[in-house]
Image (cartoon, rainbow, N blue to C red; front, side, top):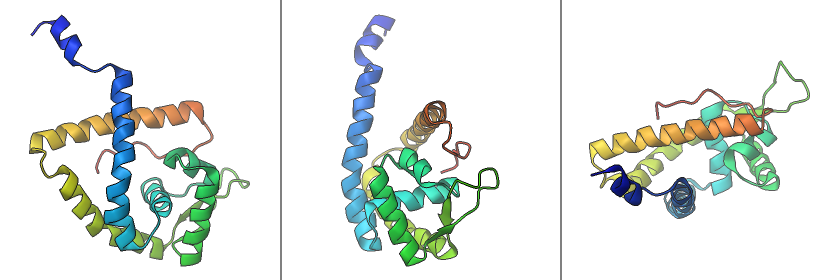
Length: 168
């Protein structure tokens, strides 16, 4: 295959972005039905818990950037998670005005309890992929996630993010 025929079959970056956005939209349904409903947690609360589990202590504005949720939705999720005892205040020694929260022990346990539901959804959505395809998907999503983290850091320097973790 020559370069010209490859160019015709490879989607432009903007088309790939639209595919990723479509994937992000479509995956919300199975996550809600397969994880949130059985775990009795809203999708916004799950997003906040996942961000805190992956990044550690974060302030509300950090969570807004990471989750893509509107500030009011993040605020409500934080309030509900605080009422459940799943998050607690944390201290940022570098910035006393910053008000981060982190998962409490109960929050870590609640997140751990969602894992079997993740397994069910993952199996339903990804079980038809070969091992090689799963490896390729992992590698590609790691690369895109790294670029997303770079974007957030470049455009929102105040957001505290951990180094990209490619172990999941």
